[in-house]
Each structure stands twice: as C-alpha cells, then as structure tokens.
Image (tube, rainbow, N blue to C red; front, side):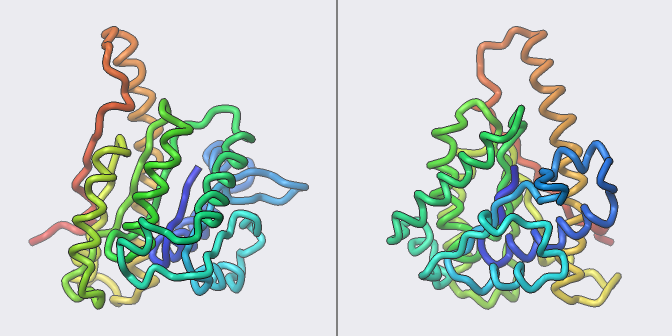
Amino acid sequence: MIMHLGNAGIQLGLAYWNQMLEEHNQNDKFNKTMFDEITGQQIARCILVDQDSSSIDKILQDPNNKYYNPDNLMAGKQGAQNLFSNGYHIQDIQYLDSIIDKVQKVTEKLDNLHAVQFIYSIAGGCGSGLGSKLSEKIIEYFPNNPFIHHIIFPSDIEMNPVAPYNSVLSFNSLVENSQTVFLYQNQTIMNSNMFNKDLKDINKVIATKHEQSHLFNEAWWALSNKLFEVLNLNQSLSEITFFFFQFDPFERI
C-alpha cells in the first residue's frame, strides 16, 4: 500500500502509476500486487493526500483518473504553507483521523500487507510535517510491518526558503518510524544534460527508480525475514533501519 503526500508526492504518483499501466498488463503478477479490481476496473492501491485541493484536482483531470478510487483522494481545507509545523501540528483533527481511517480500510482488504510505503518531498510542509505525523500514527496500527519512505531531497534552487529546516525536522521521524529510506536527489537529475529539464521528465526518472526499488524491496524483505529465521535473531526486523543513499540516476563524471 502506497501513500502519496503533498504536491510532489502526488505528481510522482501520477508518473508512477501511469508507468505501471504502460509496462504491466492486467494479468501481470506484479500488476496484481499493485492494483485492486473493483467491478472489473483496475484501481491503484494507493491513498493520495494533500492539505489543499490543488494537487488532488490534477488527479481528477488526468486521462487515467479512472484508475484511482475517488474515496482515496483526500484533500484538506487548509494548506501547510510550506511549513513543517503546519503539517505536523495539523489543526483539522478530523481530517487526520479520516486519513488514518482510510488506511485501515484499504489494508483490511489485503490478504498480506507486505509494507506501508510513503512518497513525498521533505522540502514542503505537507510532505515533511504531515508525513512525519502520519508515520508516527499509522505505525501504531502496523508495528510489525516495514515502513518504507521514498523522499525527495530539495534542489539547490529550491524556491521555499525554509526547505532546509523542513528537511532537518523530518529526519527524526524517518529514523524512528521507518525501516528503509530511499533518497532521491533532484539536483543530480537537474544537473544532467541527458534530457530537457522539465518537471515531467524528472518525475519520470524518479518513477522509474521507484518501480525498481519496489522490486528490490520485495526481494530484500523476503531475504531479511528468512535470514532472521535461520539465525534465530531476537531483534525484530521492524527495529532496524536501512538507509539507501542512492538514486543518482546518472553517473557523475
């Protein structure tokens, strides 16, 4: 189950799920782990959250909007104004509770929840703040399931002047409430001359890497669980954090 948070997380979600639809047919085994089937229609197994409605509106206008469950598009009434505090100390408690309730409803339909995944930027307020709050809340319901975070590092030309502070403030939650963290560096992609530096191109690159990381995650968690079983280790896998400082998509010369 994947949660896309904030403007960046939702835009990446569009690129990611569109790529899934292009590369995997309906009977594909991988596709069946990522989509639910409701009345004959494939529905992406994800929840998209933003504290204002602008990003959610883009989903509704997308040609592939039929692949998203409208009930899983959760827009708040007040934006985070690019501040960690506005996302973390959210005033609309009912909105926060509705997100957690939606997570429970989505996961209840699954035979086996492999992991809870988050995709967001730590530069903005919703991703860094609300992402941290949701991690702390949701992990209480799934203490034995791995939490995997795919986070976007801000670029050098980040327009939000408090982006560095938002990023630092989100680190504690990442360490405490995740077992794997994938870091994507926007600046590295932007420095590349291999394609037009358009936001859609950057999203496409990160979406490709996210798909590869999903395949890696399945293999890694299966191997790790088997390793703990064979070695009879006492420490729970959920108590260990793996940081993957990677996804420079192009070799630096």
